[in-house]
Image (cartoon, rainbow, N blue to C red; front, side):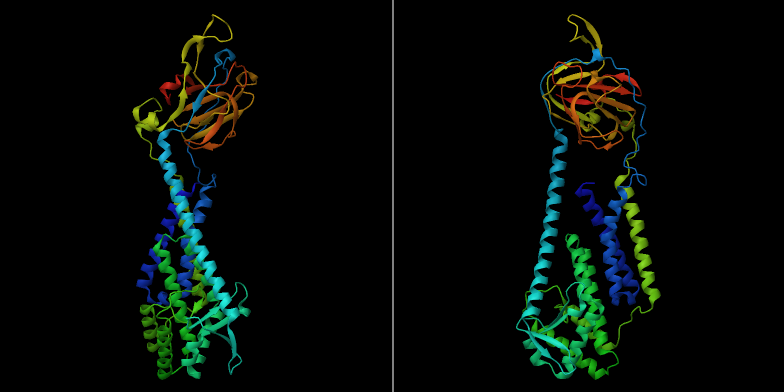
Length: 478
């Protein structure tokens, strides 16, 4: 599958699941303060797209094309394949702009992903350097913290997979204005992040947000996860404390917010302050009102995981089915015969000389003889590419067709409506028998194989097993 359909599926899945989570949180207030709810939901919203793409590639579950192969009709006479020289085959001009647009959108998306991941990597690198260069201080309870001159109140930096090597960092300015009791609460808050491994999990979620950088819904989900994680650590720091102590802790948050008011650099690490006045106001209200309701029972977590997996699977199946569904048949699609719209949609583009039309023609191997020509011939240089004029299935791709080398290398394409089209005397082919191909996909190269006196392509078409003039089925642009 190309990149553009993947981006459509990614946008649909992340938006649909994200909106569902936001609406559910409005109805069930307890979920608002559950970090796992937002984290698992964000993972499911992105993973659904990748799962849908994987399922769409399983042809035995969701076939890409619904075309029943017809039997291959043999019995072509070698004398019906005359020889010719020189032409130029190109893509149909009607497919140029969609391809350019698809490539441009793909380039834009990949550029956004690269920039987002680069910013994350640089931020992690800077945070690690701050931790390494900080001045170590041992508190009365034996906790080691690092002091830095950076304009950040307090944050925790955890190397991925190594929580034992976590660093709690405080700015020197913030450290100087804290009382011993306030410092103890702040350190407890950061230890909560270490225990919960928020810095590591947050890095994973940031990577998923980078993959969906174009979707504001995933950014909102990550912001909700950050906020709920801070609420949980606030609860750890104030658990069992009196109203006066909770008020003192809330005052500490105001100090942190004041210190970071002029800060412009943001580090991708678990931090005491979210640097968002609205979020800090909500945190202070929650601290003063008491602990936030959370889901503590293991059954809640199992239920969330089961629901997320079920939603992801169902959504992936629906999206993959939609991406592979055939358009509804119409009277026009049921008949492959030459009409104005079919000429534009299904065509070979051969800019060159038509050297032999369908019907009676001179025999190039017997001077003066006339034979019945069952196809059309075009001059073309060896190596000129041939593209599929419509979606279809390769019925046969062989070097020896019908047990005779006279035909040279042959490809037979079957498309909707019982149409089989043979291309013979090829230089080579890029497909194999049974392969499904899409309109505009390269399938072969014009050559001079078999019984032939020059490079050319012979195009022969059968409709429900009966030979017909290819010009009445395909629009051949000359």
